[in-house]
Length: 64
Image 1: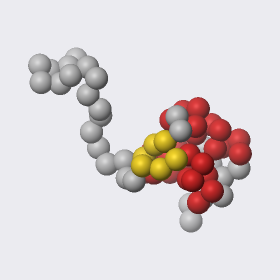
Image 2: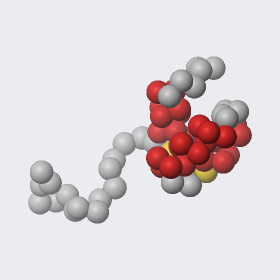
Image 3: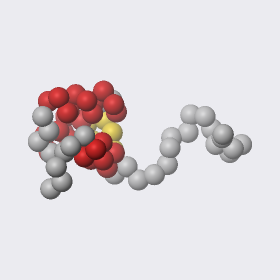
Image 4: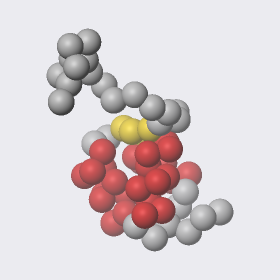
């Protein structure tokens, strides 16, 4: 339930890190094309780097 001061279209708050393209993220972390496509399907063409790291690790990306 939203309170009076929260709009329906308000962006969720939190620290997502730097915004990056899925393509650049996949290149930086050497993801395979299937994982890059899965992330793009889940987030769209751009997302916060922290969100992408968390999603990739949940799907088996090894930690550095």
